[in-house]
Length: 101
Image (tube, rainbow, N blue to C red; front, side):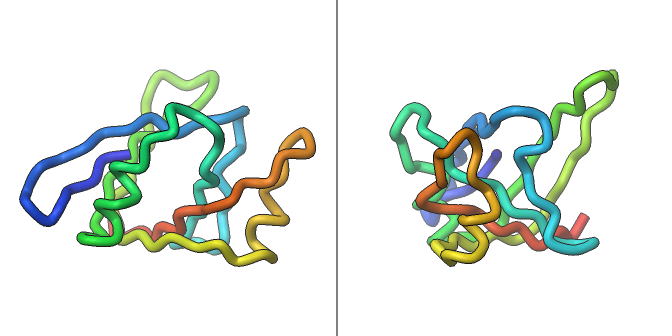
């Protein structure tokens, strides 16, 4: 995930889990759960300042990648987070991306 801060600086953070962890909400919207990781929130702070994000998605079994550009928002919506439980672990936050490109 690539984001930009209000001061113009950039941040790139890996996001991931088992294949299929990104939840498609409709043809132009995905949700990415926040899983335990390095406990840094730089990218999420940036989303609050500038909603533009870029994602490069690695597709298992394929040589290419899926590139997504769009606008993100953070959510703690119970119904959405309940759909993203993996091995009994529910994310506390999700990033919803409206795909522009």
